[in-house]
Image 1: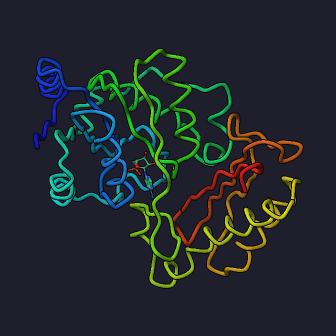
Image 2: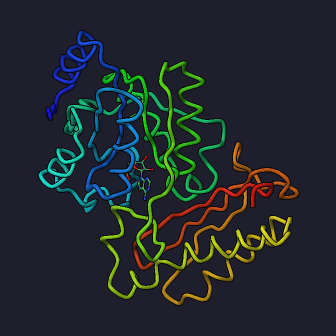
Length: 284
Ligand code: AMP
């Protein structure tokens, strides 16, 4: 496994793959890897002959007062995990390498970036779009793998790739969970023991809401009430949002007559957790 930290070295390593006739699948991450990330790496192996993983805690997607400085980092451990997964190349640049100057270009999505997570994290998806575009231009992958865990991000990346004509196949992998249902996240390490015990309430809320749809509930507002009620039963949880929206434009439908996304953001103290579940009323 090769580890490259500069853009020039990444481009040189990419040309080695190209000369050898290898296709490349990229898995962008912010590191502190867990099974969710590793499931993406395994999918990447099915999509291309050379698997690249980027590890970069991207400052432009963090707002003032967010957890950029305390975001967990452990490059040595990440590299050991990736070695075991037979990753071919790890691109782990510094912030100075990626942003020698503060960037002036911003990426917008005509409002799609201002709903759900974007409502409380202004500028977040602009930063995501910028760094993903840079990674795509540096690595020039044939495919890139993202997680359904960040459903809004996956949707916006698909738009980015389509609208900017990146010749890259986007693959979205299902959410990987702990045995008790908590979606894996690098931020789970922030939780106290009590908060950790309470955190599976997100998954329980999603399952309860999905059950209601399975039993014929078709009013998205009723489904949102169910999500809110389950979260409200957990005293350590503070709800940020609970929505039932269409999968293609994240807007509330009048009725649940097409695939919807149930999505939640919940705070436990200073830790913000998100989770979601796509539900197709015709298939449950
Ligand atoms: P992050 O390091 O949090 O930026 O995540 C890197 C990629 O891994 C993103 O595409 C995430 O959606 C994905 N990811 C994070 N957690 C999970 C999970 N529990 N299951 C599946 N994918 C995940």
